[in-house]
Image (cartoon, rainbow, N blue to C red; front, side):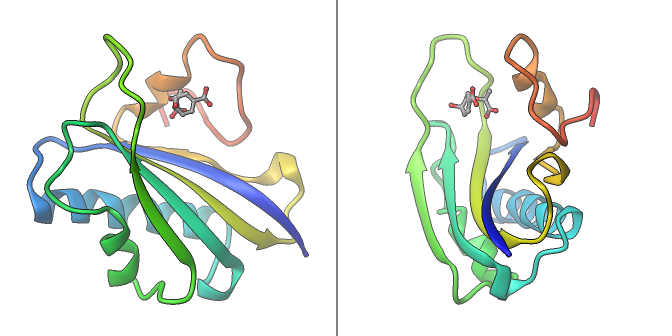
Length: 128
Ligand SMILES: C=C(O[C@@H]1C=C(C(=O)O)C=C[C@H]1O)C(=O)O
């Protein structure tokens, strides 16, 4: 087992608590499934939200999925002029047997567009 990091992002349609929680649960679930993670293999998850997402802390969604042990924190994403709005991002530190290039980053709900024009990272497929 080694420690690695995995990325994810999703977009919300509206800044409403239940909607943000639903989209964040979807994101966390997909990251876990794609990387064969369970509660014990997740060390920590940093969530960021763009400044237009303020109705709830996304970490609550992880707790709702039963992630009681990992260290969680939510911070506001740096505001960049013209950047994609209404986003929840995460970076999770995990214990895994996967090789670095086997880690599956998950960019849901159109957020794969974020990676256009930046160097590729493994596990992000065009249109994923
Ligand atoms: C491109 C993204 O947005 C920004 C750029 C990042 C990067 O270059 O790796 C990471 C997080 C964000 O600050 C992303 O979330 O992947």
